[in-house]
Image (cartoon, helix red, strand yellow):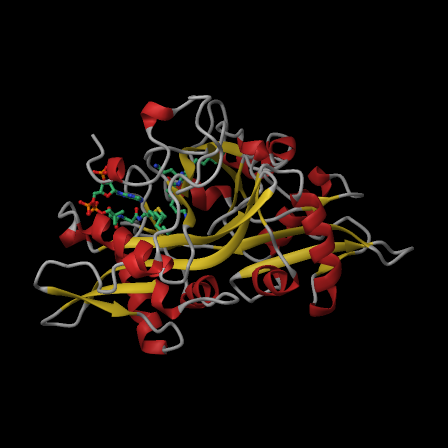
Length: 388
Ligand code: NHW
Ligand code: EN5
């Protein structure tokens, strides 16, 4: 059934629940002399290119490829439209390898027709911190689909990750592959219900009018928690401590240091927004919340072309109840003009989703590890990792 994935060091369906298999790497590192030194072969009309994301032109080419060919919902009404600033942030992370930003061009026209990327990360699985690649933005131009190009791209990124002496990876997908470590549900909180209904993102509920719906989703004009403010550079040490302590309770979570927090969580306009609560009495940072900006193109609507979506990222509550913290973040997202606030049922998100009027979406997100077996599938609430 999975001609490619059957050959890869990932959890296989036949092994699910086998108590004799140990947790950890599925296969040992290949001796460096045995790592293939040349790239894999592409069909003869295509060639590999390393995408220099420092170059405006290259960043623009990747942006356009993804804008026209990346992930859509199951009814092809919306397509992710990651911004250039977002791609630059997501790919140029602390310690990144340029060689892991891999494109495929048509030899003749030099047009970029496919892409895959990896970035380095330290991810803790139970007690063990593992150096991994986070693989994302796998995309093949619509006209080149179903030609088995994706397996070649995956093998090529794997080879280049191995060359850096890294042997594990983490990735997510909307489709089921062998074998998820957990499956998460997308939830959506309407901020601009009229537009969401007009573009077909959402529907008028049974026995609901538009004006009742607008009233249902109304939010206050300003945040309510005393000491709630935007995160600043000087907060990096305190946020790192707060976040490391919080993430330590999950089975799988990133091992963030101050450098990582500065990159991933310091506010970056139109890319990532972060807020915290500083106690008005003690000036201690007690709570933290964040979201990233990922608009979608609206395919074939007369009136609207972009859906502005915010995605819940990392949130930590120690003093302010999580529901109150997230209500403040919804207020901010509404103020900033987002149409919808999305979240997965990871970490403690279950505790606020229903109360804050999120509803389940029609999409799921499956999480995977490459060359690392875990004993038992996790519950989404045991997962402390959000990939972009
Ligand atoms: S998930 C988003 C993936 N991108 C999209 O959905 C964009 C729209 N679709 C496309 O561009 C986030 C194409 O449909 C793609 C497949 C390119 C998806 N993950 O070339 P063929 C990520 O970026 C398998 C993994 O004919 P295609 C995460 C499929 O099961 N495998 O298909 C990426 C089949 O194998 P099988 C996927 O439609 C993680 C084979 O590809 C997949 O023209 C990558 C068919 O290939 C997916 N999303 O192109 C893995 N979609 O065995 C990283 C399909 O079933 C692993 N396939 O026959 C780790 C590597 C690093 C290790 C380091 C130690
Ligand atoms: C990860 N790095 O399907 C990338 N999105 O629910 C790969 N549905 O937006 C992962 N179909 O339910 C890709 N509205 C996996 C996700 C692919 C995109 C996707 C889903 C997630 C989505 C929307 C629109 C559906 C349009 C028709 C949806 C319902 C909202 C409603 C609001 C009011 C309360 C109830 C829910």
